[in-house]
Image (cartoon, rainbow, N blue to C red):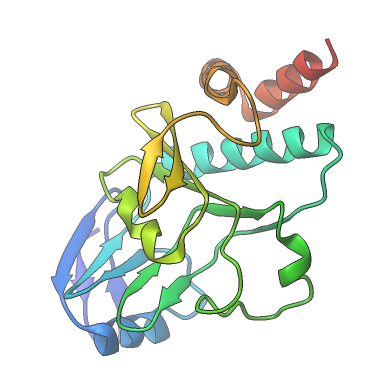
Amino acid sequence: MNTVITQEKIELPPGAVLKLLGNWQEYQKYLLQLGDRSIPRIKYRPGEILLMAPLPEHGKDASLLSLVVITLLDHKNLTYDSFTPITMSLSEVSGIEPDYCFYIENWQQIQGLNRIDWQNDPPPDLAIEIDVTSYTDINDYLPYKVPEVWLLKNKRLLVYRLHGDSYVLGESSYFPNIREIVQQCLQIASEQTTSEAIRWLRNFLRS
């Protein structure tokens, strides 16, 4: 597949990342053109627009991490809401699309909302990004002040927590030993299936 960017069509080959010079208005036009399509992914930073077509590996890892979080939240009997896909945007400042996000502490504040006002409503408590093509910059989340962001890069989970005006690598505030758990699940999923990885996790939590 060739890269095609016209007023009628946007197509990228799997794994491609395209950086375009552009303003907020042009980003909005691309969003309108893409409509409900989840591919390609689109991101806005001041002065530039990024388009990315995920590889199958991206989708599999995103699915696995979301299931890990859901399994852990259910085990802890916590109430939550989750979203995928979702577009977070602040006019003229930022537009991003996390692979998955969870409201854990603030789920009541967005319950029943059809649209989230990123200027006034709380951000997700946890956002998940899978980076297979060097598309993600953790600082993209700073305008939203998401408290915790997980970035899976090179099959390694990086846990970033917001401290003041920057993100710092550390431990998850919700799940102790999450990096080791994710590493084990990734290994099982690569050798067997996602279902086997989640089955292992459920058994591990019961032990």
